[in-house]
Image (cartoon, rainbow, N blue to C red; front, side, top):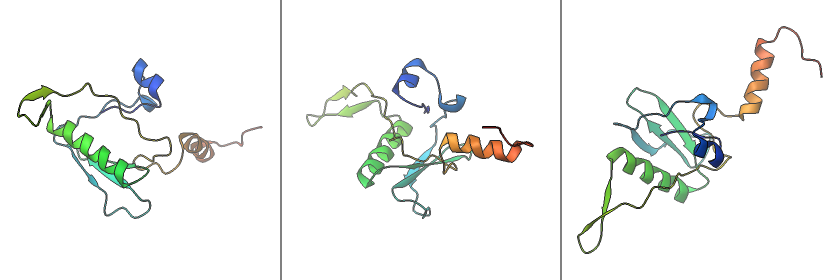
Length: 128
């Protein structure tokens, strides 16, 4: 699973903040019931012990993401039609979380993080 700033970056293969894609092998995706700060949050636990938090706009979108990620984890390659015949799954379309979604520990926007980082590590104030 890879993270991209926008559709253009995804089509060019440019990952968000140079993050390498994470493996969904043996991952677990579920509602983050223990997370109380925001609504519609789900978590993705990966096999190396890392956890990612995502926020959806509503329960429907959250459940859709959980289902899609869980299907990817299970390695679903085909769907069974009502007639019992197996058909190839439709070509997967890249899904994108809304721009307002918070991911993991970051509670603020990347621009704000950079300014905060500047404040912490700068010995001299920046001239404006």
